[in-house]
Image (tube, rainbow, N blue to C red):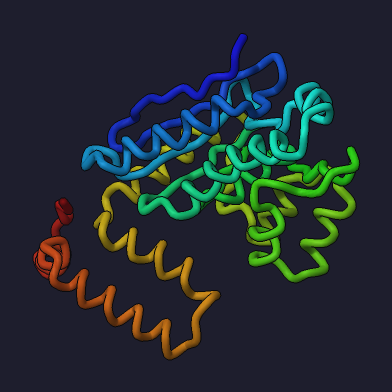
Length: 259
């Protein structure tokens, strides 16, 4: 069965499901292209407020397809680089996406699959899910932004342990390290992620987009520059109709209806 990225809607949430169960939802270039296209279409839609990425058949993703990687060793470096770039283009699209993106994780989360989950804004994981950065186990270095994500989220020694040792890690420890936002009972990660998405869908989309942009800029700017960015976003959002609705709803003790 060829790799698929299934696209469905749950209310105002787009659900993208990686499906290639015979290889535990390993990645394929067709998935990257479909993911970028689906996000592009959803970005232009006012009906979609958030995105959930998950895997089919109780598995998030095993990451790279090892048989295809073995075959790729016979190709030139340029062709190999193009394959990695496909994944990286999808990762960058997710990281810079203006709407919230949530990973709903069950089962195995390995290699680039782990990188994909880390690229999302929030992670909801089943308590029995297993994460592993397996690259060093098979003589490879990480891809999919793993070093960037872990290097920003954790002290160097912890990031090094995860990447150098390649040990299997449970959700309890990753939750304790702050890498996982919410733990779900087995089989409930998608339902819990959709519930979280629904909470975000009720917030002002322009405010959420500003928060994501400000968080992305913060590590690269001085406090003075970040304060200026916060000022500009604050004023822009204050002038938006959603601020008028939000303030009025709070004062009237009613639920806001954001555009």
